[in-house]
Image (cartoon, rainbow, N blue to C red):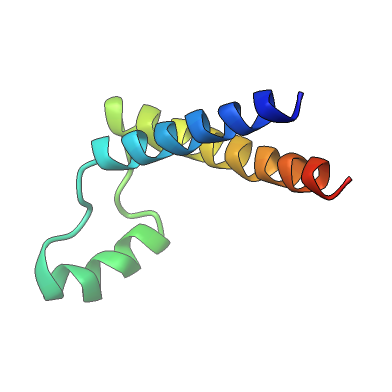
Length: 78
């Protein structure tokens, strides 16, 4: 069972890397870093279509990775 959770953890890590790399950048250059962060924070730019799907998939995979890493850490300790 311990090995199964570790394999799942590696799969979730690779999935998280792939999903993050599939997303396109939200800002370009230093000016985008200064002003783009404020627009994203206050919701002026809305994600649609594939961007929205990738954003939600990233949140789901990241949450699964976090929970699975806690489970693996608990199993290794016990």
